[in-house]
Length: 68
Ligand SMILES: [Zn+2]
Image 1 (tube, helix red, strand yellow):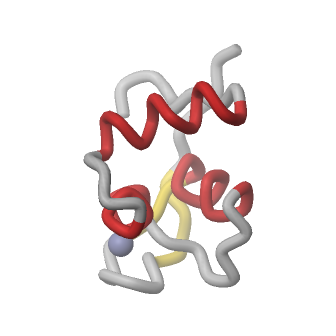
Image 2: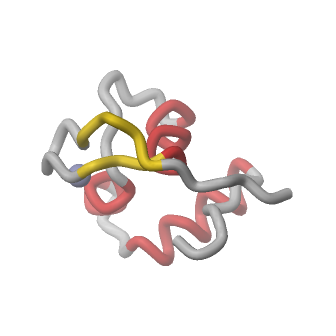
């Protein structure tokens, strides 16, 4: 399953960096009221981004877009 990475016209509610479709998707999955980037979400879980992606893949069967 390939998903195209899109940069959105939205910013992370936490750090203000521009978010992409992957960030948006994980924010939704984790029921964030406001979209946050994966860096901030990973930080909240106290793990690094790589571990976070791995976890999302295991728990939700979600894969980050290629090239991210
Ligand atoms: Zn952020």
